[in-house]
Length: 226
Image (cartoon, rainbow, N blue to C red; front, side, top):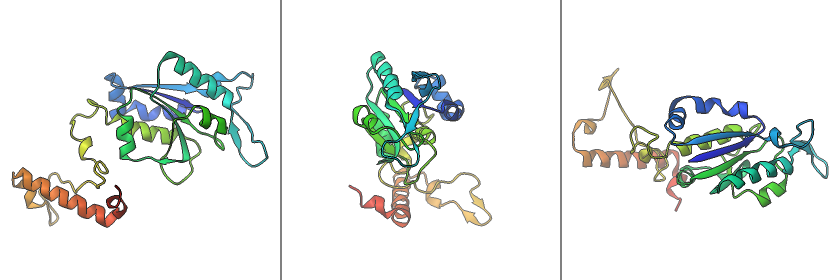
């Protein structure tokens, strides 16, 4: 998979990809991450990427021209499955969207900044708009990193245990069940005996029941989804 991220602050994005799972995925050539500084695509000496909005109002708006130049250049080199715009009013990001994106070969992620982008960018270039929650960040960079992390870990070969991602919370609209490790007892709190039984059908049944009960208690909205 190749992910091209368009941003006015590439330095803000690099750190998450230089450690842990994402770093190993890149080193194993399972994913390519490319940062594109939008200021490299401006045509004026001041490297401007924003301007005042028509009609008045607070906040600057990202210009369409440098975004057009960057996306057009990328598309001239390869085909892209999605051009994603990170925005608070996009579709709420969830595990199902992460699963879908992990199947793609090439995607572009455009990070919003300032007040947002000229609407014509969304009309002409963007194929999917994503939000990571009902709140506003200073820009789309941190949100893009969240999406990349959730997607990349689903690519075959990225995680050491291929079944690990399949048992994560939200994969079946359920939260993950409780998990335990050593010691068997700690300050009077014991690990459930069923986990030592060796009866794997019973263990799976226990996990399913706990996952359902936990979801019903904490996120009943997930159980009502189709």
